[in-house]
Image 1 (cartoon, rainbow, N blue to C red):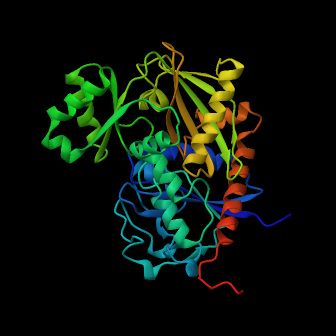
Image 2 (cartoon, helix red, strand yellow):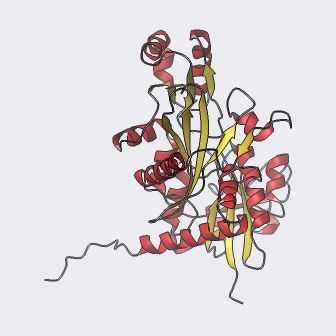
Image 3 (cartoon, rainbow, N blue to C red):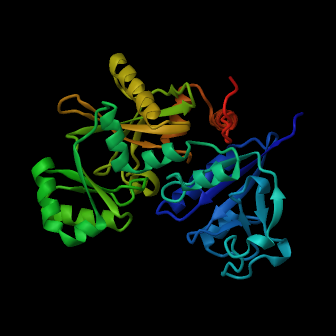
Length: 390
């Protein structure tokens, strides 16, 4: 049998989706075949320290770092792989004594990592920051690259790109936290004049519906903008598609991406918010309709638009593309793209591929193959300029 691949799974992180990341990573690690993969769990604390140990996931959940060790991936291809502090120097108690930032010279090589699997939702994980580190380190990784991740993560930038590509989007306005603090009345006047009610207010750079509010009047709009401003310096105010159905498509691939069957989420709450996704009681759980009850023409339109949107931001590896379909007029709107979608047992991304004939373990293998394929493609680019011989 060929040698097993060493896979470092990153989870946790400095994000409002810290807990969601842990849930997704647990599902991923359980599904990776131990006969094929040596899995190295790497937790990232809320403060940004990287940790390994007997159970870094439990350490993050309990916020008790007894016995864990600091770890790092260096932005230096000559120091490939995962590095960690010696076991005898492991942190004691609830304080992480040694951090990669303060003790880089004390870390020793732990393993040559074949692939990094970032299961990091939200800021400092899904937004191109970790991807940039891994590019500098020269390590293959699962999912989209720096540009792809950053564009998909920023809802305002994504809408601008989608609009330029002729993709259908809901009308919107946007502002910044500083502008909001200086001129709240003017911003609300603009939103009311351009969009009316209801509207959604969203942090530009976050997922899992964290910080999102549905606003039906000026008082709710003021509260919604203030809530979004807790999580990001840029705030999106978006027209609420009337009587919207939530349609999602999973996309997989690099140069030749494939689209799954579409699915539909029928929330029992006002909209598919964080509670509905991860914390809902049995009575509040959203219904997942897979495949979505759409006619053949609309199904194909949704799948085609998903691939177009994916290519528009140079998608790689994976993404879940979300749409809003108006019951009022039948119009379809591109909502957003998630480049590291949820991977829990009830998450739509793997469930849609399962319904399309790709089982969860096979999906993970496919994603790692795509990571290696893209890494090799990027390695084919010359990094030193040499005039061509005539």
